[in-house]
Length: 409
Image (cartoon, rainbow, N blue to C red; front, side, top):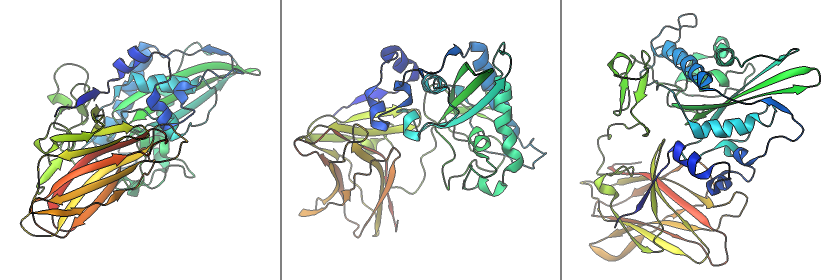
């Protein structure tokens, strides 16, 4: 059975939705930043990010990332990076960032308030005050100011991020050099407070960095851990490239080689193991986003559905380690979780047997890892069931990165 595929491209989203509030944003936050009007008490004098500004923002970010990747940050002895991605402009991130800048407040919005469907979003802010009205924005100064936190950075965090808030703060710097971040969009506002002119610079990043316990970047020779759908530095033809930075080809998520040792592997990128059939509500959709692909459904009260994978799996010796990543919860932020989701394991050789661990409704915006240790080595079929009681609000379930290997989890 074929499923509808959603391509989450920023330009398409902007053209179709304009300045309306997309329903998906209400899942992330009731007061999503994109849906807020400009602050009524603030008279904005200028709030434009020009094409020239965009070029400066990208150039300054990528020059600094290249400096780290190639080991030329000698003043602070930063090791080389093998997987540093080149940043490109993202219109959706910029649209949300501009709505933040229109609030005229030097304060981060909540993580859900700036999230987009493609990924979780990081954020850097910069403020400048002046007694006279500035003639133009100074994006190079903002980007350099964030990077200047390097003087406080502890290199032990490269292998596992701990904290960027400090004191002293280093989170702006670590977001700028977060290797897996490759999309940026920014907003700007100039307004007057009392006798002073104030500027607010907002940059939103995707996928967001500063994730606890995750590496900021991989140490190693530049370009040696690039995605397979990228070129690096001088190997790139056409467009702008930077030494030591992996440049993604087109509007596609970074792709990496399939890891070895798995008897079943599905990331919903057209792998054979991802073939499925549906019973019940036929509302499953595969979404191909800029941070990876997943399959999901939204069910209303009284609806149920089962997604069955047609490919079975088997290992030579027990046990089996089954891993999947999921997220689920109410379709609108603030409503109560009400869905019931289960993973169902059946053995064709034993028709009356089934094992049905429950996926708890976590309401998280990030995927949660779910490991199941199976104590057999027989052929196994796998499916996912999801239901919402009658009278309850709409609920969602999304699943990605399903894998099976022999051995303990």
